[in-house]
Image 1 (cartoon, chains in turn brown, orange):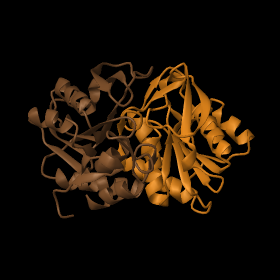
Image 2 (cartoon, chains in turn cyan, orange):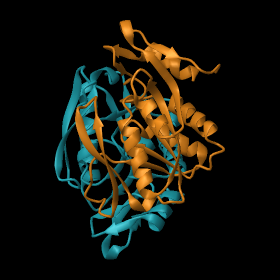
Image 3 (tube, helix red, strand yellow):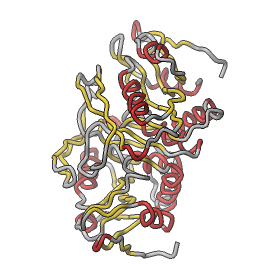
Length: 194
Length: 194
């Protein structure tokens, strides 16, 4: 997605060979207009897949997910990283290790919002080692729901997350794919003409 | 806001005299269409206040805030409840006690996204004891920014948060005001004809 790649080139900061900071428009400050375009793009990519629910994870996944939810007219569920006192019903739970934060979180979704009749589009802000996406897929599997695909805003294609997910038979659509962050420069994999 | 009150009556669950659970459309599963209407309503209420930034807090504040950001064409910043390894620049920080979760969190915003030239609309999902909103106001004050008002989705008017904020001289706009949750029923304060 050309607008997204341009935004990353213009406003992203490379911190070493593995870390791209995009806190100016995605992970801390949010460019709502760009997120709306991203949501519409996911809706277009999955328009023939009968999506009934979008599943994401707090916090940075929520913005792209809710715009996709509006464009597709389906509810959006965000998995929580810790249990809250008012989530007292049964929970679907999976463990996710974050390489960025170096902690393991239990992520959870209330059983009442996902069923075996659901066709889910999973959305997240980043795909790197794939742990968050695999955790979200696991929650959907626990509910018996069908995962139609994984929509990612920024993929670090030099890490193994995409391969892990594709190897399990799932479709992955990343709107920006980063080949490398070497020499403090962002190099993209460009697959489309847009 | 009539659509919001109807949604609360239809899908909210009263858990005791203080707790209203709205995890079906706001705090866990999100109704993106309703959030879009809410964002547009905030934009309408603050259209003459020269808003340059919207400030909210993860996670449930993000959905209403990003739709307001789209409607007002301004960036949205969400305060984080814990520091992440990639937020290594200077931070504005305030302590917030959550009565629901019974913990104190440090909330923070990167100094680079808020300046003394900013006119801020603070948005949050709930206003009860006012601690989160006061923490967000404090972060804006630390940056020298002007807080133009506090936009709240659901206010529990029988708790003291609104009064604490009004006493400090700030404008509060709550789209649904709850007078009481007694007898497991939601009673609203209705101020407008919409």
